[in-house]
Amino acid sequence: MPLYHPTIEEIKQVVAAEGSFILQTLKAFKIGLDANLQEDIVDHVVDSKMRGEFIAKYHRAFLESILIAQFGEDIMDELFSRFAKQITQFMELKSPDVFNITLFMTKCQ
Image (cartoon, rainbow, N blue to C red):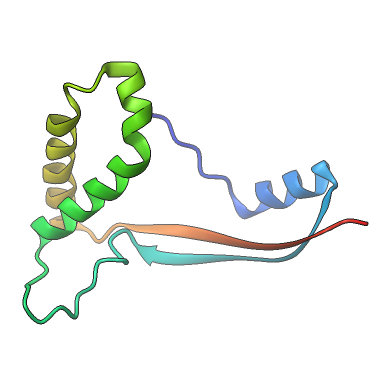
């Protein structure tokens, strides 16, 4: 599934070209793909399998309706189960990071 992640410069250009807002602040933050998974839980050991399942559930939350429309509901459990296994294997080799971009804009008068 193609996803597009704009650069900071592209965001600045789009905001400027649209003209309704003034960009006050734009910051990019590099975080781990599993950054929201709490590692300080005393009762659990957070292993790579748990991290892979967490990331698969995160992606399922925003991709499932799009994928169901294209491929049907019957394959979703298997698809995201396989994705969890693949991301788990990947995370054993490398810690994946993502960039979050935060904007603060004001409306032009």
